[in-house]
Image (cartoon, rainbow, N blue to C red; front, side, top):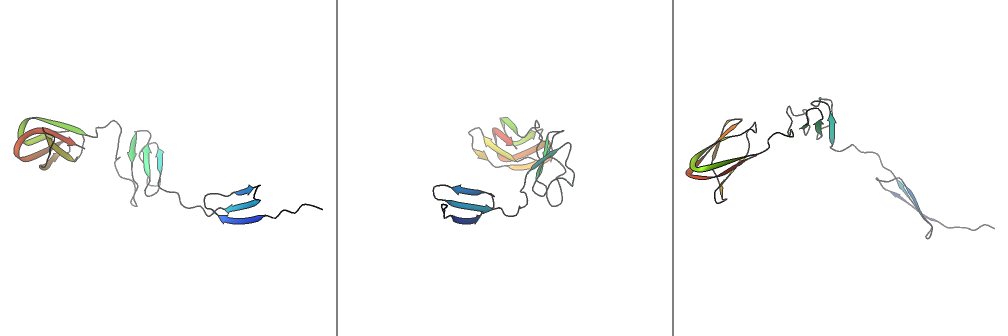
Length: 153
């Protein structure tokens, strides 16, 4: 005569695992079934040179390993024409206005139209009229002269 073992068998669907677990003390067997694979999420891809239109999916970011540039995110119309970040390029500029003035002319190397935050010598934020003369020069006008700092990012 053989020993008879009664097993409680539970079948549970778990989309993350495809396993069978046996617990010898309680003689339970749990089977998990794997569901269908979904689409991959957004990610980072890389290649040599700027990304081609066929590379990546909407929402992806791209690293150009030759020019050390970062593009993205890819939209339904494709990749941005220029990278959003190139290591080693200036990302911020601090302008010191040593003598009080109501008009501050700020030359910078950010190559664009940065955000401008101004603080006076007491570190109080001051609001002024910002004008972009070019991609390398900003003029900020105030109602009265003062000295301080302008932070461009």
